[in-house]
Image 1 (spheres, protein in one colour):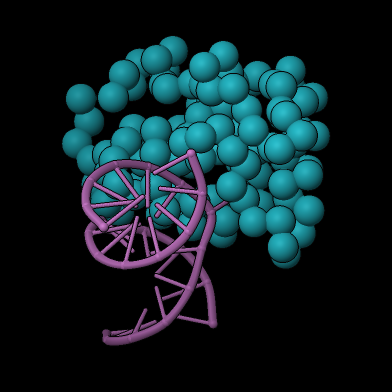
Image 2 (spheres, chains in turn cyan, blue, brown):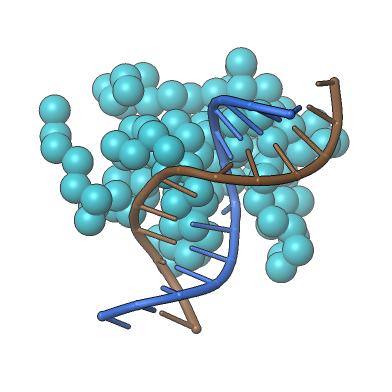
Length: 115
DNA sequence: CGCGTGACTCAGG
DNA sequence: TCCTGAGCCACGC
């Protein structure tokens, strides 16, 4: 397997985010794990926060571990937008902004990461 | 170049 | 069962 460089963590996160299949979602923790730092879920959030727009990432497919859209909706209507985007892809989002990870969760299997 | 902060997670009370 | 605290470390100012 490929060695993990902290320097490339951001790059990994971006790559993985792009790798999320349409109609599926994943969690910050999963991305962090796939990127090589299991407990860097927060960092993933920070990266998406600053890079999602820049790199045009499908950040809407990234949720917290409970399947909840933990994005801050204070600055913009991101949460609402995220719900809309996910529904367009066929992902069911409840009125409480929660996705059933049991059905839509993706953990990098099809990508060959497998932890 | 140093410090504060966070779109998270887990463990303990 | 719900709430609180601490750990994680890259990014931005």
